[in-house]
Image 1 (cartoon, one colour):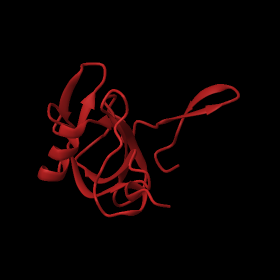
Image 2 (cartoon, helix red, strand yellow; image 1 turned 135 degrees about the vertical axis):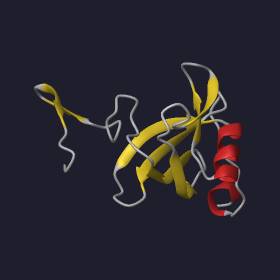
Image 3 (cartoon, rainbow, N blue to C red; image 1 turned 90 degrees about the vertical axis):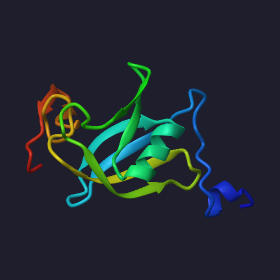
Image 4 (tube, rainbow, N blue to C red; image 1 turned 180 degrees about the horizontal axis):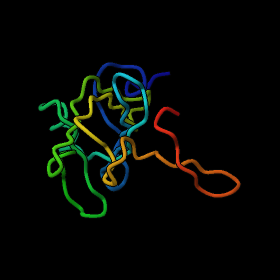
Length: 123
């Protein structure tokens, strides 16, 4: 493999045509998937600089710091990029529920043959 993006130690995110990269956020302690969002270059830079998760809202077309209005910020403990630098893994300590619905995780429903069902918090 000769692509230094894939094998080197230089940060060179492969943003999509909209200038975004997918970010998967997990709980640092439990490993639970908390949310999936997108970052642009500014959100990534602010996340690295401040240690607090920042994202780009596709619906509002604006930068936002997670928990800015609720106080439920995500303190980043580890930030990793995948092999071809087109996805991020954000390990974080949540200061409260992560989902805008008040749920701990945005993934609180299971898809099955009968449709959706609630996922138990201990599940």
